[in-house]
Length: 160
Image (cartoon, rainbow, N blue to C red; front, side, top):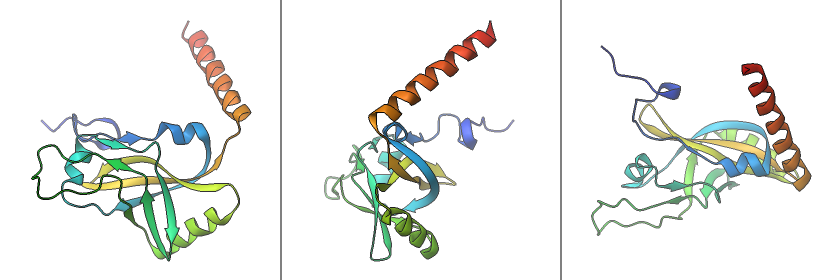
């Protein structure tokens, strides 16, 4: 008997996948890519507990390096009091030079921004999915809601 598998190859009851729902609601996501995250000390344990906030986070490319800004990782509760860290510090993203160049070029266009879409574990390492997005207008958001409601109604009608 093998171990039970959850969604997307995770262990049953394993580490959570943290989604940034606000990003898909407020932005048209044009492209996405996966990046590693440089973390300190007990930040990984805190992420495994799901104590991460991505809704105000964004990424930035400066001097040939990519950084995750505004991501709040709560301090690990059981940690030693001598090793504390700033929960809002900027964290370096691990990408190839060509990927960083692509992201820098994409964000140079007017209205484009780099957003974290989800944070997850892959083979024991913390990964983040970055998306290049363009801000939605209010009427775009309303249209998306109407379209989603119409799809739900069609699905309900098909089930009957």
